Amino acid sequence: MRNFRELEVWQDARKLVKDSYQLSKQLPDSEKYGLVSQINRCAVSIPANIAEGCAKYSQKDFVRFLQISLGSTFELETHVILCTDLQLVGPKESTLIIEKIQLLQKRISSLIKYNNS
Image (tube, rainbow, N blue to C red):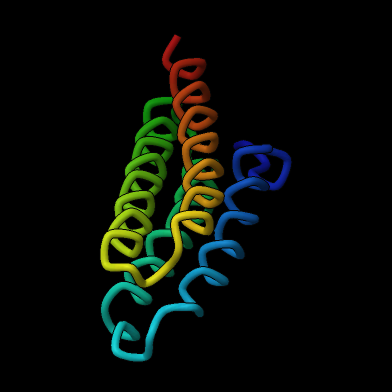
């Protein structure tokens, strides 16, 4: 069993949750049950699935939860892009968080590849 607290991807994912919540606070109240909810849920899903995967005994199960976490990063990126498209957040704000998301995507992908070899 792995200690998820020691994984840098989990630590970075926690920071991304904070950034995502700060971004979603800027959205209008009319999005409370729409984009705000979706952004917050998929952001929280990223470190949660990394942690859950660490509790699994097989590499295959660990990788499966990393893949779920990776999927959540792509979902989050899509929601941020949509916020920009709908002019709910500015391009500067979305660019900053998208860069963090994409870096985390690369790191999770690398961890998946490492554990598949």
